[in-house]
Image 1 (cartoon, rainbow, N blue to C red):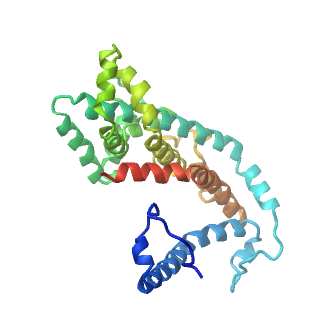
Image 2: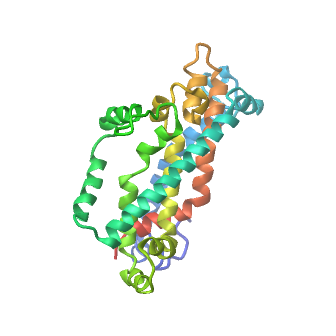
Image 3: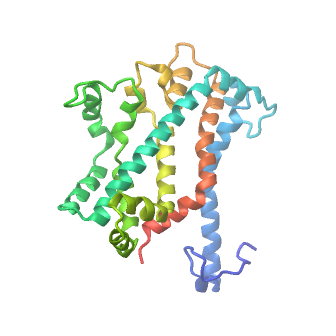
Length: 303
C-alpha cells in the first residue's frame, strides 16, 4: 500500500504524523498523492513529447493519433540539429553570459544585502523599500528606458549596443536576490561580525570570511535562478545584440535559425534543437535540487 511506511516527526508534509495514523489521514494522503502525480505528469509529458519528437520524422510528429513512442527512433536528428544550428558557438556565448550575470549578481546583490542587513546605513529601510517596489513594476514598463540607456549611456555618452555588457549591466542588480540575501543575512548573529570588527577586520573582510561562507544555501539558490534565467532569456539579448548575430545566446540563435529564416529547419530538427537547449538547465536542477530546496526553506521559513 502507498501509506505503508513509518513516519517520523522529522518528516515535513501537508499531513502531520498524528493525522497519518487516522483512517481519514491515510485517505487524504492517497488523494494528495494521486493529485500531485497527475500535476507532475502535466509538467513532465511536454518534455517527454519534445525529446521523443526529436527522434521522429516531421510527418510522424503531426500524425494523428500520435505515436507516444517513436516507431523508428532516428538519433541522427540530434546530431544534425547540433551541427546545422551551430550549437557549439551559441552554447559558448550563453555560458559566457551566464557566468557574467552570475558574477555580477553575487558581487552586487551580496554587498547591497550586507550593507542593508549588517551596516544599517542611514535611510536603509527606505532604500530597501525602493528595491522591493521595483518588483511590483512589470518588466516591460521599463524596457524603453533601459534600451535608451544602453543606446547612449548617461554622462559617458557611449553605446553598449551589440555588446555583452549591454545585456549584463541592466540585470546586474536584482531586487529579488537582494531580498533573499538580506533575509538570510538577518538571521546570522551580529555577534560574529562584531567580534571580527574588534579583531580589526574590515566590513569587506567580514563579508568574505564570515557571511558568505555561512550563506552557501541561499547563494546556491541565487546561482541556479541566475543561470537558468540567463539561459532562457530571449527578448533583451535579441534586442541588444540584433546587429551582431555571432554574439547571440542559444535562445536567440534557436529562434533566428529555425523560425525567422525564410527557409526554416524541418520540424523534427527544430524540436531536437529545443530538446538540446533544454537539457543543461534540467541537469543543473537535478544536480543542485537539494541545495535549492534547502535554500528556499532557510530563506522562506522563520522561527
